[in-house]
Image (cartoon, rainbow, N blue to C red; front, side):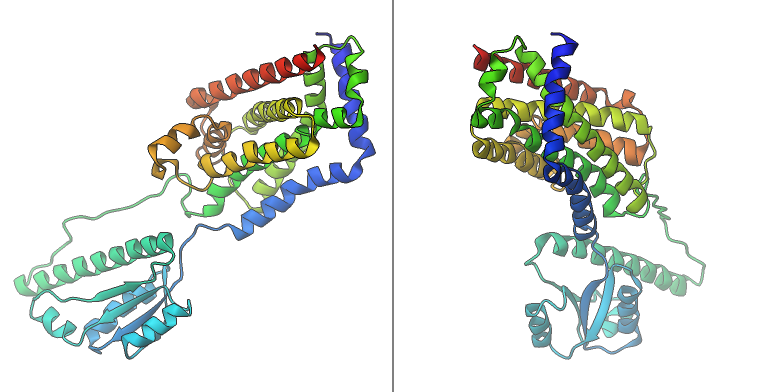
Length: 377
């Protein structure tokens, strides 16, 4: 393999890109559009949960309990109702997600030291949000019940009482629990995979369709030089996309980048090389641009979006699907990005993920070269 022939192939691809400014503009604009769309629209934060209250007791104790929910940032008491039929009607209209029902004997049983029951009603049509809301509500109730027990003991003994446990919770790496800090690093991996695989998946298939592949075959250029030359041109665009995504993520969405920026760029380039190689392999596998585009979407976007841990927790997937996720390179790149962005760790602590990306890039380049060599034969 010689650099002169490789550069000649790359220069030819650069000329193709320059003659098609609309495709170039699209390739550079897509990361910004995806980042803005997902960064604003995709939020996993569950707060200000709309809730209704039916207070049949009307006592100071019941009002204190309601005040606990109203004072939490996770709940918003949007109104009081007189019966459960009103709760059902509002849930059917999606105006409330949760309802607190306090029975008439609540304060009487509470003051007599008996077990007082209340009822929480949740809209389970959105099971994930309902589960989170239930967890928040149980925390509010446990805290309220614990404080009440301490106050009862204090009154009965006449001695100052302190809670037996004083939990002090501290969240590391994402203290504000902003879902955007979790989403944006993963979104960079999604964007690079989509852009890289789709751009290069058309390059050799287009050569076959317009008939220029035969001219390329008549030259002394080797298969590895064709693959590397075509990848070099799109690698430049991919690096520009990576820089755009980093600038938008850090300065626009204010996602903290606590690690080394050069390591982010290095890992981004390594992941990009593998994604570009996969696109060239698909393009060499078929001779139709339409089929290459469809294969690019099916084998890059869908697995990366669904199986990389970008949104859906891998730990909650069935064991067979969890095994498949080990074959998705974006899974490892997302772990690296979140480690560098949020935890500020070095690559020494991510040796396994880095080794997989290196192996993936080398294996995909070898596959693409072998496939193109078959076309030359």
